[in-house]
Length: 213
Image 1 (tube, rainbow, N blue to C red):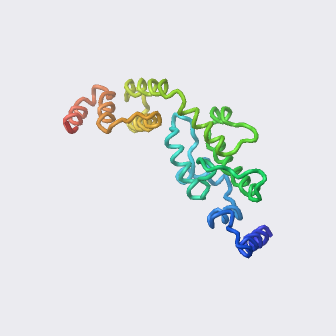
Image 2: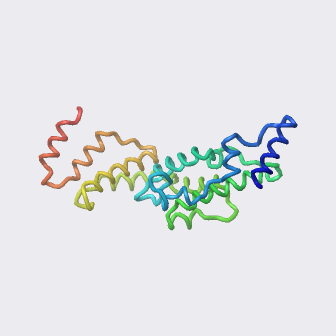
Image 3: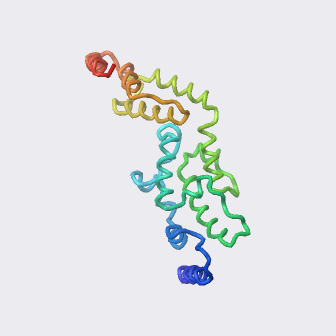
């Protein structure tokens, strides 16, 4: 029934020479909106948005994965700077339904600690997106100092495995990008070698010699 009504609606617009309110992709999304649960980490980690906690999943990684999902469903306009329609606009109700779905994606992909800081009544998806952004991008100086301290003091002995050690170094590098600090590949390798215990001295020496001057 919904599709029949919608089809009549779009045909009526066309007969009067009026442009459609949505693109073809947005129209399909409005007629058959995706289920939010299908776009959360709790269902399909490799295809969906990871749960942002700022530790295991960095803000930069979360943003990139979330935008991939938003582009796939053609709802980037709900999180970028695209102005929302006025409440008096004839298309506002349809826009609002889509926005609520995107808002559910945002809330559903936050850790419990972050959710209580971001959750607000009567919020749009864009407003929630900006609140998350401010948590991670405000006070860049202090965040950069904290990241640098962890980066320079991280050692293999403090991690459960060599794989976890390498992964944490990569995660810290991603978080440096968020605060506008670039860490070169050489710096990553040097820090990795610096944090190895004595039994890796031979390997560390070989790596150091292999680095470009």
